[in-house]
Length: 231
Image (cartoon, rainbow, N blue to C red; front, side):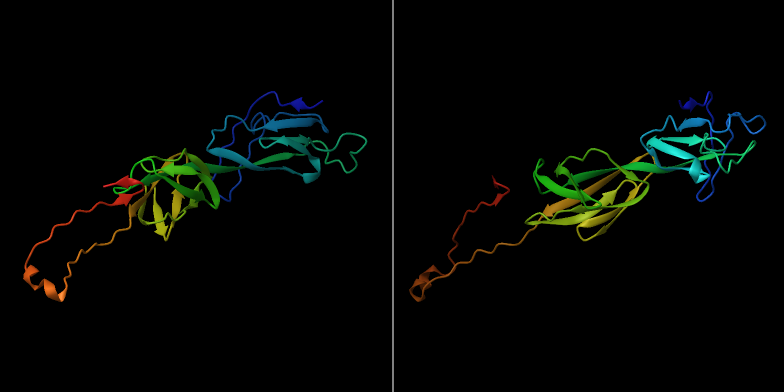
């Protein structure tokens, strides 16, 4: 049966590409296990914004599998009998490697001064559609790797995307924005749309026999409808 290491150990990460390690039990008195022992090592206590994105074992032939993304199983020193030909012998070191990636959040918000609150707009994040975002609201936080991600608004009829603003940075290009993903924080990215506008001119014409009407003022009334709302 697998042997669960009876103590925990902390490893302080360094900047990429440096790898750091720590012996179980400490450098001065590392914990000793019988050669061929099957050991289960799990990375614990990770917040949502830190994820394990890869595991490996050195030497690779001592890898006994990864039952889940945060756990690796390995044999210490050599494979158990009768498959232990080429044993590394007493004092050998078997290494479990865990690769982590940092994450942050992006929220997509919709703003406007001319479009009624509640009107939905469609977006995608890195090409994947998200639920519609209504004017005056934001999407739920979207977990993404730290760095940048692309948010794209689907063009809506009779409106123009006038600007994009992110609390942690966003650069607009057409209907898309390259958005900064901060570590363990939230970037609120606001896409502002306004209704396309034009001007209306009402003219008065007359027939040749209407000469006496010259300089006479005529009055008109008007209304207009936007998104079903009559004004």
